[in-house]
Structures are given as structure tokens and as C-alpha cells.
Amino acid sequence: MTGLAMAPADPAGRDLTTRRRTARAGRPAAGDTALRLLLPALVLGAWWMLTGLGVIAPTVLSSPLVTWNTFYDLLQHHHLLVDIAASLERAAVGLAIGGGFGLLFGLVTGLSSIGERLFDLGLQMLRMVPFPALLFLFIVWFGIGESAKYALIALATLFPMYLNVSNGVRNVDRRVVEAARSFGVRGWALVRHVVVPLAMPSVLTGLRYSAGVSIIALVFAETINANTGIGYLVSQAESFNQTSTLVVCILIYALLGLAVDLAVRILEWRLMPWRRHVAVR
Image (cartoon, rainbow, N blue to C red; front, top):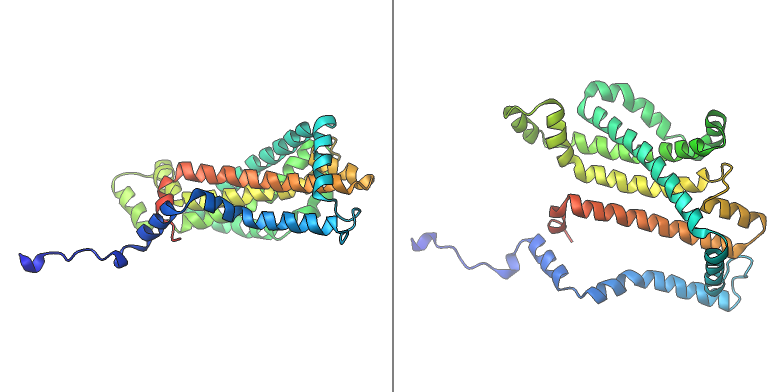
């Protein structure tokens, strides 16, 4: 029996994941937050210094203080929250339409070779067309109302979701699928309970990319006869050469992008809690 006795575990030989998780658990939260804020703080400091010393003229880039005062003025007197809500609604509707179709086409082409031959080539060709180039064509097709804005955002968000879902479904472990079939799981039940959960990391990656693209597409969509939204403020600021308002709008777009990315990260955290324990770093 002594020959079968196991040697004491060597701390240096622990699994990499366990060691990384232990290191993360011991990392101070304050230090982690400070590290994340380091680059934004450096950018803010450089911005403040260059504009304060006059290296960058106010007509080129407003100072942080002027930008903050402009933001406060817009918040108090110009229905800024209404404009932000209008932009978020357009991005959300467009993302829901484009992401939904991307999920559908990704499942079809990933699960069926016939579906891949039928749809993939056309979608790849359409993917190569820059969506801003279709702006005026969409105005002709959908008019200058909200439909054209939704359609442009939907088109832009379709392809990141499609590519990631299709790739995720194709890379599902076929042994797991065959095992499920041996237990009588077939058809839609197989897709719902086996394929989609296994492809969920790719689905959420596609959603994350699509959510970010929806904010980028929003910039172009709100040039279509908008009288509300951040894009409307941008067009007004350009007309009156209001640099500080332009900077405020750019920062709002950046914060909206950060917010939607954080929302998808939280969704991933809730739907796939096991991934918190398998990260390499």
C-alpha cells in the first residue's frame, strides 16, 4: 500500500487556473480600480494641460472645464436626457432587429450545410459593403423617418452576430451532440438544450460586438433628418461651430458604448457563471 500512496501536493505544481484565481482573489479591489483608471486619468491630465497652456486652441478642442460647463448647461436647459433616451432607443431597436436576424442566420448556416450554401455567400458580399455607403439608398427606400435609422443600425449589427454565432455553432463538440441524439434529443430540442448552450460564449461575443457597432452606426443614422438624439446635437453644434458641444456629444457616445459593453458583460456573468473560474489570466 505504501507504493500506492500519493505524494504531497506541490504548491508550485498547482493548476494554472487555480493559481490565477487565487492571485485575483488576493488582489486589492482599490488597486485594481486604480489600475483601470490610470489611462483615462493620464488622458484627462494631458487634455487639461495642453488646452490650459494654449498648445491646443479652444476652437480645436475645448478644455475639460469648458466641456463640463457645456454639459451642465445642456443638462439644465436643452433636454439632454431626452436626446440620450432617443439615441438609446434607436440603438436598442436596431440592435434587436439586426442581432435577431444575425442569430437566426448564424444558427441556420451553422447547423445546415444547405443553409450555408444558400445564405453565406450573399451575406459575406453584403458584409463587405460599408453601411454608411447605403445611407442615401435607405432614405429612398424607407424615407426620412425612424425606419431608415432602425434599418441602418440593424444592417450594421447583423454581421458581427452572424459571424460569431455561425462559428460558435460549427465548433460545438460533435461528440456531445451525438451523445444527446443517442438519448433521443433531436430537432429543436437539440438546438435549444445542447447546441445553443455550448455556443453561448460565441453568441455573447457576437452580442458584445454588435452592441458596440450599434453605437457607431447611431452616429450615421442620426444624420437622417433627426430632431432629437445626440446626432441632432452634433449637427446643431457643427452648424454653429460649437466645439465644446461637439466634445460633450463625443464623450456621451463613448460613455454609451461603455455602458452597453458593461451590460453585455453583466449578461455574460449571469448566463455563464462558470467562465469566471476558467480564465487563463
